[in-house]
Image (cartoon, rainbow, N blue to C red):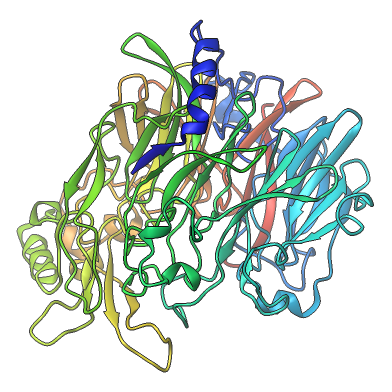
Length: 638
């Protein structure tokens, strides 16, 4: 579903005329800094640095390690931050209290810290963790760091001292539970955000995340409306209702007054901005709940959509809904990526949304027009009582999916005839089918045990997203093949919803995966043509597969590991890390060849970033895992 407001058509025409000359590149980061969560406002995760290259990357050594263990009541182990770096200082968060720290980028020395005591409010927070980091804004000599706390406060800090800015909000703080246009309990309302806000054109844009929607206690929940605040004063400038209110576009897609009580439909991933156009791009999530929509019949705009707003006013410019009436937990999980490409000889300012369902949707970021046709195709209907699914869903004609979608017999593991037969027997007990096949009831008499959903709710791709080489227009996406079982059941003691979700892991024959490999992969997609350039397994074959008794004498190919991973691109190399693997993998951008694997002290838990200070290039990645409290590790060439 795509629509562009009439009020913006003249503006877009004027902008298009200005860009009729060759476009200026969406250039990533070119000054050696990393000033935003995903490198720049366009979330490219690209740096022009080249000191670390193919010739010296295998010899990278640890420059410093920064320990996060003492920044909370107990150590954190799943540390998902990506620090930012400005003027020789790293800024990031740490610990369950989400402490903000400033770190010397050359030595790893802690320069200052800030912590907010939120009292009982934290006990009800849905995202009590260190979050993904902070945002930076500068106006003349005024430099600020912006934090969203676990208890859902927006805090402005002086970047030099770490002290709250007195002129912002109330002594540096804005209570984000106010101003939602629907009353919420200031202590117990389960709303927060683990992603940093985005700041552009003097406006801070704030998203929201609630408790996971697998088994909501109620069909009623807090809405994830998006708001813009003045970066200087903290004044609320605008609000965008991701669940449209009466008189707003899309209100009629929420039947039976469901707009009045349904929650979620927020933006829990980071935003992206086009600084020059003044547009902010919203990757929205599902509405309450993730797997049953009988209490919110209709297409449910603007859930699971990409929405473009004028950042100064909050007015919608255009939108596209990736999933109508979502019941698969296919939230848009990562920031949209802005990149300038050339399609059929025409320069295009593009935006690409990488998704859990393993599609990359590509649009003109001025108008929202798809770069390649997106077709509404018929999909199976639900047989759950009270449910009414959309008869069609949007399928991009290009690029092709970057991971397995749906499940057929041809997708099942086939290392040996016996394993193949066992896999077929396992799959036969469940509902299978193409992507967008609806969940079934759990263990219904004479029916399937549940749906084998592929991709599962973890993707495909998830919050780690992708990265783009701004010079070539090539998108790199790490993904996993990990189907999961979905079955719905009724339990009035748990929820007032008619049905909630029961999910469980699905093992294949003899504990092996159910599907053929690769189970983890990296795919390179040329956004100038929409074609895949290469795909390689991400990681080697796991030991439990290599040493499995059923595979003695079998030539098992490199399978990759079913670990989600984040990526970063420089002018020389592609770096991939994450999912708890204790490696930073380095790939040749043109071929997908593994250049080297750099051992880390523990599993990588965040996406990597890079910067230069004192004429040395560094790569920093967050690590942690069982028995290893979270830390940042900085690597550099000898």
